[in-house]
Image 1 (tube, helix red, strand yellow):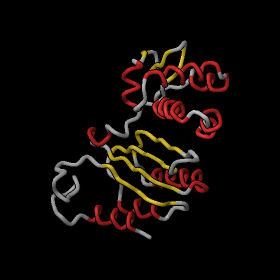
Image 2: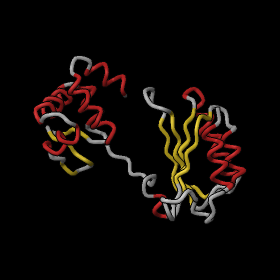
Image 3: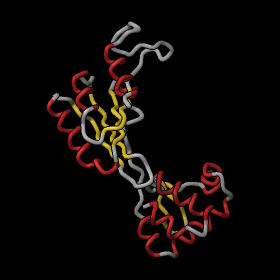
Image 4: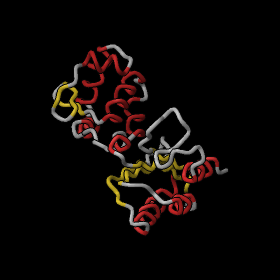
Length: 197
């Protein structure tokens, strides 16, 4: 998608900034207005959030609507609801895994296979493999993952980094929510995975 935006907005950097914001947030353009699903977004608030003036927003809308390939894409955009940010509040863990672009598909299937073998209850799976961004896999799980499975994930082909988002009881202390001690085998294992060369 970013290549499409680059091609159509190469001479309009301010409009491209607006178009990228719309795409990344799933905001659609229809009938001269911008929407989140069916709710109209005020242009002045959008301009403030993006850091451009309202005129740029209006010019971007006009340009999108008169450029048929862009119109086709932007009128169909929708935000994707996700549990990723609220999962720790619900007592669930989120695995955020960075993988090599050329190994994305294999890494994705390997991670899901490992979780199935561990009988892990998966609440949500989300992945992104866009050219301009780090390839990521997000998995929301109900419960905790075994340290053995963490080690296996570290060894999958294309693995780069794993971040675990947990429901922390006390963010001030260097302890995880599963034990009340400074030394936590799960935390130590995670740090070793993240520091791995």
